[in-house]
Amino acid sequence: MILQNGNGLFATDIEAFFVIGIVIVGTLIFNAILSYILAKIKRIPRQQKLFVNFIVRLIFVGIIIWLIFEIPSISRLFDEDTPGNEVFLTIFASVSSALSIGLGFAFSGIFSNLVAGMVLFSVRPFEVGDIIKINGDIGVVRTIKSTSTIIETFDNILVEKANGDVISTDILNYTIDLTKIRTFVDFKKELHYTEELIAPSKRKSLKDKEEMSLKSVFKSVIKKRKQEKIHNYLFPMEFPYKRFHKLINEVENICEQYKEKFGFKPIYHITGFDNFIKVNFRILTFNSGKIFEHQPSFAKEIYSTIFKDYLESN
Image 1 (cartoon, one colour):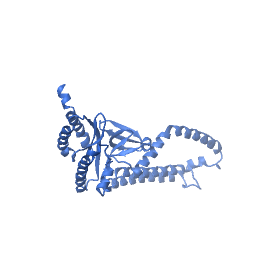
Image 2 (image 1 turned 120 degrees about the vertical axis):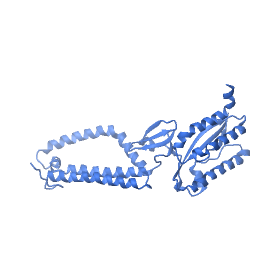
Image 3 (image 1 turned 90 degrees about the vertical axis):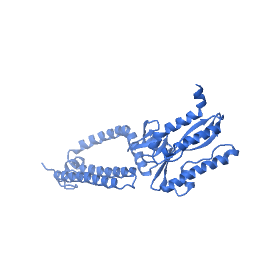
Image 4 (image 1 turned 45 degrees about the vertical axis):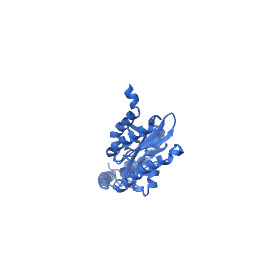
């Protein structure tokens, strides 16, 4: 028997199935073409491409669900004027209410993370490949999914964070977008450049030295405008007061040796004085993989230099 619906979108079930089939096939073809075109456009960030695909698919799924409810045999079930539908509508209302409450509790976290993922795709506080810090975890963003973000720490540990938690906490992005850099002042701000808490008598000489190092990096970056990003990684070390100037000279030689490995000579500056002299090391590179590859050995050489006398005596 062919059901007909004089007031609906479709006259018969067969017509509805035919149209829905065409829409589904058209959706698959459109998504394939859209994905191909987006893949060819290199200047659009990967996150924007994923966001566009997600929104397009969400719209098509909504259209298909609407068309399914317009099938005469299904739409008649929800018609109050159709005899015998009162019991079905009552049962359907009760079941749908119970399901909506149950699913609401079950999927509230998933839904909030999904919405958070949409926010991340649109706002883009970071992208795949960026070095970021979230809740104390520092690493490279490996994947941004609709409900979660995966970062790889420099201990080679993959950490998955729910997108709801990501957008509700402070995000520190250590990767610099060079397309937004115009002056050396902009460059320093993006590097989170701060005044060191050091003795006034030594402030000028040490600050001048670091300023010269940063200017050298900035000039190199400007020459390589084809690079869109530069990664900025910092880690602290503590030096003893004894033989400090000699140790710094040895560290300077180590930094020079790692210039070719990172692409830029590592920069260091004093951040404070306590029981030890606190020194921050800054690694700048166009390739975040070089940090994974060379930072552990770089830090180990500095550590060995600092405690060389102690290690030799033992």
